[in-house]
Length: 226
Image 1 (cartoon, rainbow, N blue to C red):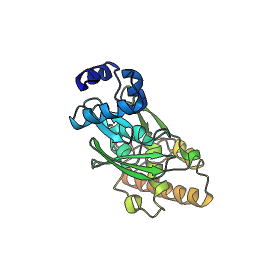
Image 2: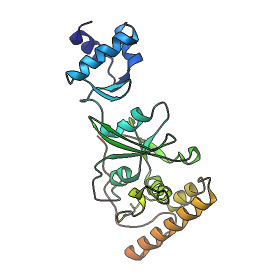
Image 3: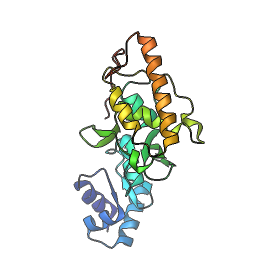
Image 4: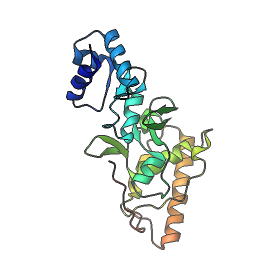
């Protein structure tokens, strides 16, 4: 099969990314043949290889969707510094896309960007919602902060010290405290709870207001995923 014809057929499928089996089905060819076709398209720059057997159209994939493609078949969602920035809680733009997943911790370097995936207990894999026309799973402001606190006791130094965080007006303190209870480890739950309360107290002192059902601090403009 000629590359130009295969590329046209794959584009007509209107997908951002696909695996070799999907490509074989779309092209009506064997998997080994599809793998060779995809490799040729990758060498010409028409598609990119994200990981073994997974390919993407570089002009279609939002970098914030990469974690889901990389951790599949296990799920993932954008969180940590990437979600904090999205929600306007930190000002520094992360150089990599951060995500959490029940999958093991791993850093992926792809032609479309670097993705840093961090393992969380499946019981704590909650607190995210769709953004960007529903295509991207993004941690809520509460969960993005808690994920950072959850990972802070581990050996990685990425989350030992957080940048200054500003809680948005809609930050739901009750929801944050409820999510903390989802942490299975009592030791880790205590650590996260104490750090959360410390941050809430610091916010209260800076803003001069209380921390009831929501943290009333200066409104932050959320970053909209493309």
